[in-house]
Length: 383
Ligand SMILES: *Cc1c(COP(=O)(O)O)cnc(C)c1O
Image (cartoon, rainbow, N blue to C red; front, side):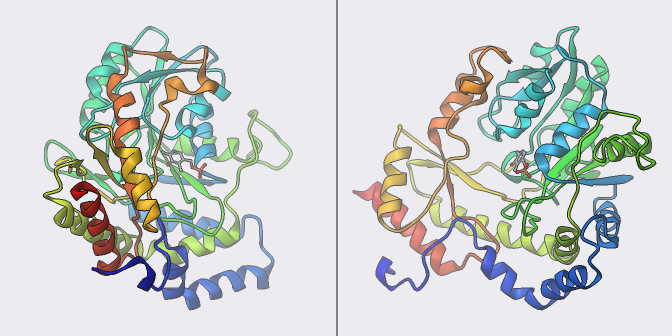
């Protein structure tokens, strides 16, 4: 077994440097072009990237913006929801999903997730619907799609919008009951994603985008992201200022060509973890939903018998990072006290928050590093 002291480089959750070095000359050239032309705001790279992503996703329209949180906010603003309208969200997600709902004075209605897939439970969505319900925001958490056929059927039945939070799942494919496939984020009214550096398609700063098959909504979203104007200084809507930088668009234009390879590398690493950890009794390894491909934004396991924190501390003392995404469910966050409404007891979500542990996952993971990690985990359970 490798000893911690002979590992050359510290093990990282994410290796952005290693990924960059492999495409350095193309990225450097693309960035230099932006600087040479000084088209820092809305340079031609922005619309070129939007078109390229639109083709990759096979969706009608891509509207770029400043970050993934803004994408969610602008999508909600575009749908014209009114204060007090209810929006159903899983209680198990990153805060951004629900934060924008609260920010717009809408009511986040928090529901339980499926403890196998970690995605929102459609049966719980149905229970949460009231006459005030206007939208559902499923989250394709860790890189696997929520149960979109069921969610779309509920949305259709009740006349609701669906905003897919696909910040962790760009490139994943949902497999419909009839066997046809759709890219994550292209099924609902809107899909919203983030290009935060550590996301599966990450830029070198902040960035985000919305996807939709409705050109009128795309146009309105584009205007809202740009001070509510189509013609400069003539403002139709109250909007915001949320742009994808030209430099970030240039980086993304290069990196989009590698997205499928990156997602494949993540799958290969996930499969190797699966094999290495298969017979560790104390763990529940990530479940593969047959109705979605998985792009493993995170490799997230559950640790049995309340030993998660103990395992994390043991890994840390052996130089191995791990993360808890996320330790506190939405309904227990201070910020949401008195803001949201929860459906049922949300025990499953609470249990997940105390069981989950994410291992290092990125495009540059080596077998050696994964062996070190899995051997350390096995040592922990043998003690
Ligand atoms: C990263 C993330 C966001 C927010 O994206 P930012 O670009 O950081 O604003 C929203 N939802 C989920 C699920 C995320 O993982």
